[in-house]
Length: 350
Image (cartoon, rainbow, N blue to C red; front, side):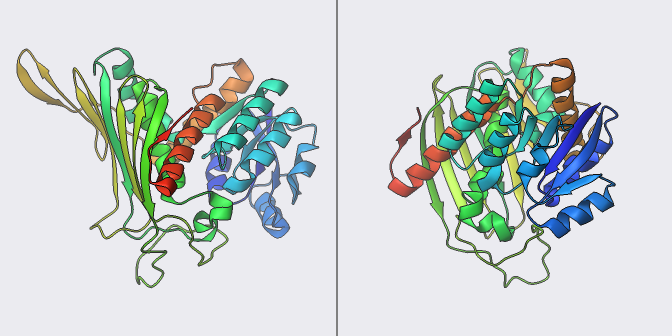
């Protein structure tokens, strides 16, 4: 039995909690939030025996084996490093940190303490990603030389900590783009990024005047928005491949749009908005739609797979498919894009 502590009681922590409850090999025994009332209510709702308002107090609980870090981005590094130094395994929500420097320090703490630090790249656990990754590894796509991906929202600025750059580190690029960039790199075989060029702007703001539209919002709401509301970037890799990424919190488009497309020398494929493989067989163009059982609840199901994998890595020393190095590599890309947008120049990634 693995004893778990959850740090941060915001929306995403509930998905972690439900996934832990569905795993027979774990028990959540502690929860923490800087809002003590929230932590207390959370512990009562889920029947958790211990609650704290300081993560160090939770980490002093010697019965805890591992923690989920579900806090604001600006606290990921401090809490994760403290947890690793306390000899706890860590599942840290994405993005790994606010910048590469923090991410490298987290990686060092993981190595120094010989404890697992798994990054919350949850989209890797989707069945569509798993199938396409399998095709790619077996050479069905050939050499993947180009990918384009994005997550565009019409009126989707969550506000609160998401749009406060001191807490989030950025807007849709670091919040939404992090998933899409990682998903493409993962399927491509995780090529090494060498250069990035990016553009960001904050021209529309949170658009709180828009009426009768539901939007995702954090538990602590607010109106401040000093992050970008749109980002566009090109990333080139050591093997010559190119990735195009675009994201938005606010954009005058008809509807929200998610896309992920990859192009190889033998076949092209997309897994969003639907799963298709485009190729040719015996001289004929063919469009292939993989036949598989789709998740009943995609969001909850992929988190369940992520949590199950985290526990499996701890219990059975299974190789982690979301290692901390991937989080560091992703932060290097994000840092380069933001620097490029600021300097209006292409940035080398080292």
